[in-house]
Length: 87
View 1 (tube, helix red, strand yellow):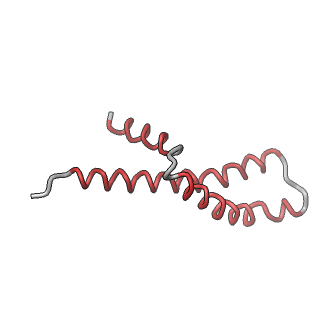
View 2 (view 1 turned 45 degrees about the vertical axis):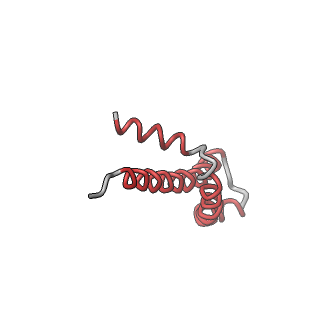
View 3 (view 1 turned 90 degrees about the vertical axis):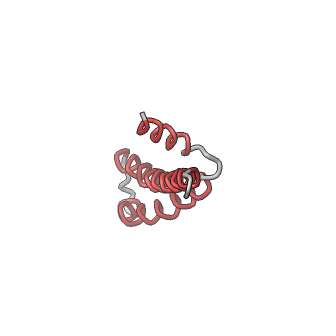
């Protein structure tokens, strides 16, 4: 049950206004670097096909997901540690 709540919380955090700006900046920066490394030569030669464009979409999506997950995990950890009673 707790893991399901964690997954649900993460999915909701993908649309959290606090997380979106940093997630998008990371996705654009890291995604662009990965695009150039992985697809730059094919793009310059005009060899982009549907399969490559799908890969490009994932190239930008994954850094967003990882960044938001990091932000969500940090917030969750801080929330949990502040709710623990210290003696």
